[in-house]
Image 1 (tube, protein in one colour):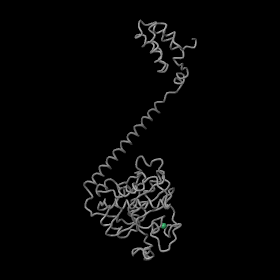
Image 2 (tube, rainbow, N blue to C red; image 1 turned 90 degrees about the horizontal axis):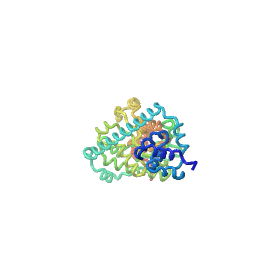
Image 3 (spheres, rainbow, N blue to C red; image 1 turned 90 degrees about the vertical axis):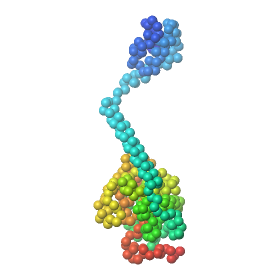
Image 4 (cartoon, protein in one colour; image 1 turned 120 degrees about the vertical axis):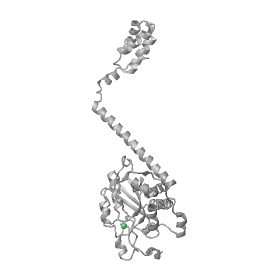
Length: 363
Ligand SMILES: [Zn+2]
């Protein structure tokens, strides 16, 4: 009984002081302010129960667990300084603002999506019928260089890349180019169909080309030509341009690719409003540097190997700029999927590109 806690004693004393238990409770509580809530509650209950004097003293000590250590540690702990608190609050507010901004961006994207599907982009013929009429088939994976997407020259050895990319360094420092997948050379009919997805908001064709590209990527993964990506990213377009066009063509392609290969989509890059790229010569394109920036929130922690989806690869300037942002965000490997890849002019100069595919004669 000597080891009984002081709280129980105090509760008993309090019940003596007051005329009834109801008055005794606040006094007890005020006296035991320094001890933690559990002990206060114990005191209160003991005081409330202790209407008779014997109830408090006759209580077994084991029923109320003594906690001498916890109040001491609570009192010795330094209170957080005002500056730390302010910083925590500021960070919380910042996070909340970021989340709200993300939410607004998502809502805007959904509205634009609805606008595209319901109002715009219903002016083109059926892409399915056109593809069947043209008897078009996507390239064999051996028909092009898996490092840069250039059409393979007859009997060209592609084990260490083609003649165009063998000596070339990576696009961006710190970002490994894991491989390129393409549907075909930038030549008719792809050179007519693919730009029309963008220019004429041909969503129908975009979905079909995206599905084909997804199947091409899937096959490349299955054959071990490229590694499985962590996420699929589309080359972004500024929302104003997207609204004017009525379609975010790369997003349409990337959505389909992600669906076919069953890999999550991500939107780590945003586009700045810059000059039109189509039709501009190389100097204009160089002047448009900094067209892309990292979106708030960036890249998810586990996303290191990125599959970037673009409609056409010509000089590689777009990919270089977009991948620079990806490298900034912590990506380590880039895979590229394009509908059509333009061969370097060097190859067309020797009469290799432009005519019928030389591989057709070999097969
Ligand atoms: Zn190559």
